Amino acid sequence: MAFSMQPYGIQSMLKEGHKHLSGLDEAVLKNIDACKQLSTITRTSLGPEGMNKMVINHLDKLFVTNDAATIVNELEVQHPAAKILVLAGKAQQEEIGDGANLTISFAGELLQNAEELIRMGLHPSEIISGYTKAITKTIEVLGELVEEGSETMDVRDKEQVVTRMKAAVASKQHGQEDILCSLIADACIQVCPKNPANFDVDNVRVSKLVGGGLHNCTIVRGMVLKGDAVGSIKLIEKAKVAVFASGVDTSATETKGTVLIHSAEQLENYAKTEEARVEDLIKAVADSGAKVIVSGGPVGEMALHFCERYKLMVLKISSKFELRRFCRTTGTSALLKLSQLKADDLGFIDSISVEEIGGSRVTVVRSEEGGNKIATVLLRGSTDSILDDLERAVDDGVNTYKAMCRDSRMVPGAAATEIELARRLKEFSFKETGLDQYAIAKFAESFEMVPRTLAENAGLNPMDIISKLYEKHASGNAKVGIDLEGGDSEDGFCKDVSTLNIWDLYVTKFFALKFAADAACTVLRVDQIIMAKPAGGPGRREQPAGMDED
Image (cartoon, rainbow, N blue to C red):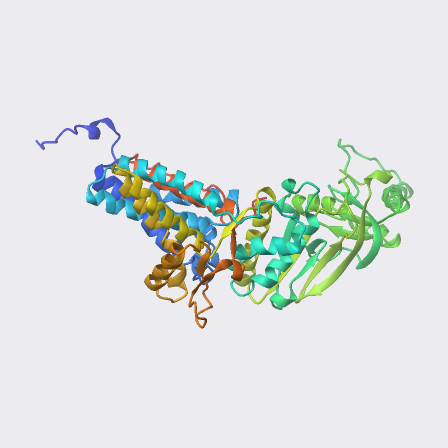
């Protein structure tokens, strides 16, 4: 008879196949290690000289990017502690649209320093207490570093907008930020409503066409639709538009019925009545003054024939979201089906033209008059990967514009703010008396990650640069940061960022540091991991990667 040992303790309480990890070594330090691995991946992509990552997701889609939000999204991180950092990065991306890399990398650095403190003998609760005091002090100091006079700005002044947007775009497309910022600022200013706080990022669209280069990029006040017009009319100017959501075709009746036809004459008349009905509807549209019909569904052969006869241009937009945007562009509302029109149902456009750009035919809808709420940035590039990366840079720029509409305050960029925060927090830690002071000192040390990473990514000597920055900040100039291209000058790589015009938005820094500290404290609070046996069957996916959020 085989002797089987009965399970005891937590083993007897939980189902077979579970995992249970507890204690400092198994739970806390393993969690910290997973988070460190994630932040090591994103850290090398930080800053203007950040390296690209090549990520191939489960659908074999290739991403070549240095955008941390895209990288962690496509990695499908499994470890529960590392997922907390991913969620912090996502929260930053959704709140501000920039700074996800800073959030993840800074949280990883905080946890790495916490590990050293734990090995020294500090309890996680003391570290959390110190980190909480440190982030409160950080936010207080960050408010003091705000540039004077930046509280008020005219969001329609291109120069002020570009100043605040430049750093966010340069971190994605270094060297091309001047061209891109100018385009993005123009597009945002065009669609900015009377109350800038109501700015909607969905109103700045991006259309990507392979071929050409960055100097071929333009802005269209209106929309760029991929695909050709349905009929033979390809260009029309200063015209009224009718939009039908369900298609332009003979509609089937609600009920089914049988038609009994006795003779060939009746059959002929039956076909003629159908033709006459379609012609009447198309003629009614033409008589209302409309020159363009936009269909959300299929366009029937017979309807198209009569549209050609009455010189009506026909466009087909299959996506209901694009159709809604088209209605916003033209200032009209979509009618359910082909029917009689009232004057209020019509929209107006300056021109609709079918153009061939880089081998693909696109329909360009321009609406320069008032009432147009949409602008499109037309991006050109040699490959799809480059275009995707340019699109991410544009998205970051547009999100930064939205953030500055809410709060336009700015702080010195190029790691000047981080070094000043590190210096002030170290001074603050000396005034504390409890064990918290070690955690606050380590929190201050974590800020050095930003200048160190910027220098490493640019191939410079980090220790040399950090010591020079501390020296300049100690002498009273809180705006000295790293100039990655200034090696020839007498100051070396450390210069006053106000002369270089590198500024970061206050809200980006505020939320990035806050989310990073919250994520780090959440991971440190965990002392046990209990995992149930995973359920069988196919894994559940929230949403296929690479899909449009619409």
